[in-house]
Amino acid sequence: MPHKEKRADLHVHTNLSDGTFSPEEVVEYAIKIGLSAIAITDHDSIEAIALAIKAAEGKNLEIIPGLEFTTELENCEAHILGFFIDYNKKWFTDELLHLRQMRHIRMQKMLECLSKKGIDITMDEVKSVSGEGSLGRLHLAKLLFKKGHVSSVRSAFDKFIGSGKSCYVSGDRISPQDAIAMIIKANGVPVLAHPHIMGQDRFIPKLVKAGLKGIEVYHSDHTAAAINHYKKIAEEFGLLMTGGSDCHGMGKGKILMGTVTVPYEIVEQLKNAR
Ligand code: AMP
Ligand code: ZN
Ligand code: FE
Ligand code: FE
Image 1 (tube, rainbow, N blue to C red):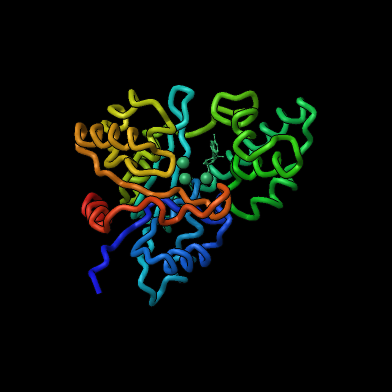
Image 2: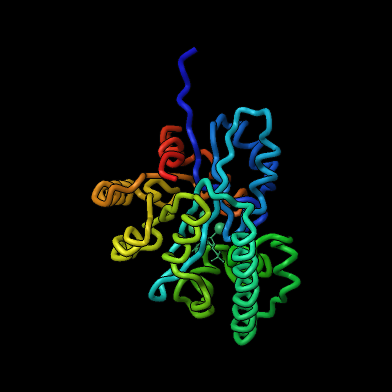
């Protein structure tokens, strides 16, 4: 049998943020498709990590403890991934609890905005979609679709809650520099997520100065041109080139896990960058 190259998907969400798969289901699927490693990267949340590690015990799958911070700089959204974080430290979980409260307030503001447009959605309804996990816009977008206010989940973002749209709530989010500092303090490796979605290359030198170590060159929303562009930027700034599918279970219409992967060598590079 030919030697099979070890592959890793370094961007996976669970239902403890806005994915639809439980940590156990994520692990089961990753094993089924033959991945060697996955990074669990929930939004402002680390709760799935221990559950995934437990589910993968004794199996041929490495779980990389990670997360994805939602941050804001100059009114633009930037997502910062943290890999190999010491996720159980109290100061860290306290910070996440604070971000969780901010997400609740932000959701309330979005619901108020929608209500002014005659769209009535309650926090209880949002929580019936999100469960106990980290509240996010994908939960709200699903409800807007389910209740017939928009024609698709994506159009909920295009019409109401996407960056800069009428019910987008900005402010009260940490800066990417703060997220990078927290990840470094937690002994992890900070990486800029899907830079093409952010679309603000001018931020990159500032983030490098703040301690950024890598850039997510490969992502399910990156075109071949975007990949080439960010490869060059990574070379220019000496950044690691990571990649992942940003799988949200069925949350984005289809299962993305494994559709964007990197060689296991990148996992070693991340370990060495701590
Ligand atoms: P939040 O954590 O509340 O800021 O929401 C972020 C989530 O919304 C992520 O899962 C994104 O993939 C999703 N999202 C953001 N913008 C869009 C968009 N334009 N279309 C679809 N999903 C989006
Ligand atoms: Zn998400
Ligand atoms: Fe993201
Ligand atoms: Fe993500």
